[in-house]
Each structure stands twice: as structure tokens, then as C-alpha cells.
Length: 292
Image 1 (cartoon, one colour):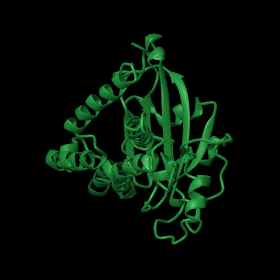
Image 2: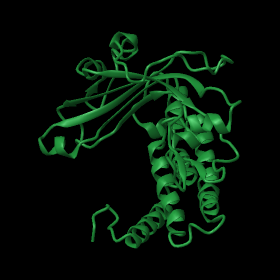
Image 3: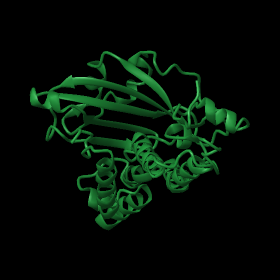
């Protein structure tokens, strides 16, 4: 097999990255495990609401993911249960052996959520009604200095595996792909010139590597989930009004800081939309991919 470019988008256990960085070792384990499932049920709250509850050592997230289910009057809910399984001061960062494709028994994690409820959701019932549950160690990798080596470059988790916090992870991989496509589009007519492909891949790296490195480290510090920890520390027995525990200005500052790091500020998102439209137009398609 031959080609002009090798894009290694082969995940957190990337073979290409292991070749480029043979001394790196396994992913870095956070000490927390994630259990994920998906189940169709009656809608809760607005029918489009996200539940985000808990703290650094025990968390539950749920949100609807299907417009088709909503049109049927139901809600297809994706949920994640998170528990700390290793002391945060444990120097061992090696992830436990797991098979990400194997179903696991709910008894392994459901107990601590037995009495949890939020927004009309009872976590125990949601877990029990889910047929298939899968287990994942929450891991990331330290940022590296380079992704691009000649005509090979890394993308997505192979480049910047991060904790799934702040709606990142897949989001950043998509931005990688768009940025890389734009740089390769720049050389459509000149890619056979010496050094053209290498320069395009390096230009992609120079934009995306520093941006994602900041997010990796921010997520390692819990990113926007820091507000959950603040509430837990200041009001472990609960509260009626969040602003009595964490002032509105403090909440907004945490959110604003993370938006700036992740590129989610309004101006940045709007500019990205303009760039996406322009790139799509170059290939005769609309922003959603339909041929014009």
C-alpha cells in the first residue's frame, strides 16, 4: 500500500504514536472508572436537558442524544457513571486491564448511586433499565512536542488523549480533522512539490498541538467540573440555591476561563463557522456536507 500522507487517528493506544515515542508507556490513569450506557425512556425536565451531578470522586452525567426518539415522544438517554477506584495520591498511574467492548455487571458500580436522583431521574432505575453497560478507565496522555514526522501526523486521541470533560475529546478530534483538511486543501495543486505535504502537516500541527495541550492539562484539573467540586466542598450536605454556595460571578468565571482554553467563546465559535463554510464552498458543498 502506498500513499502521499499517513494520518494516524488510531486512538489512545495508537500504534503510530508508540513507534514515534517508544519510551512513553501506557496511558496515564486518573484513578477513576467510567461506566456508560444508553436507554430509551420517558423524557425528563425539558426533554433536552443535561444532568450533571456529583463531585470529583463520584459523578453522574445524563443527556438525550436522539432527535428521532424525541419526535416519538421518548428520550434516548446516554449516561455515564464515574467513581474513583484508586486513591488520588497513589503513584501508580497504570490503567487497570479492561476490555472496552465487553459488557460488565451493573453490581460493579451501581451501589453508590442507589439513592441518587436529580431532575426527575433516579440513577438506580436508569442503570437497572439499561441492557448493555460498558466500562472504561478514565485516562489521558501527557502532551508531546511533535505530531508531524515527515508525511506522517497524529490526529484525535492518538495526538492528544484527554479526560472526557467539557464536551471535548471527540470535539477536538473533529476540529483536528477540519484544520488538517484546510491545510491539505491549500496544496491541492502543488502537493507534489518537494516539502509541500510536510509543510502542510506541520502547519496543522502548529495550530492544533498547543491548543489541545492546554485542554489536556485543564481537563486533568477537572476543567469546568471544578464547579461541582466547589459546591461539594462548601455544602457537602446540600443546598437550596447554588448562588448561596458558589456566587454567580465565580461560576461564570470558571466557565469563561474554560471556554477561552477550549476555544468555545462566542466569537471563536462564530469565526470557526465562517471558516467551515469557506472550506466547504471550496469543495462545492454546504457546511453540512450536502452537494450544491
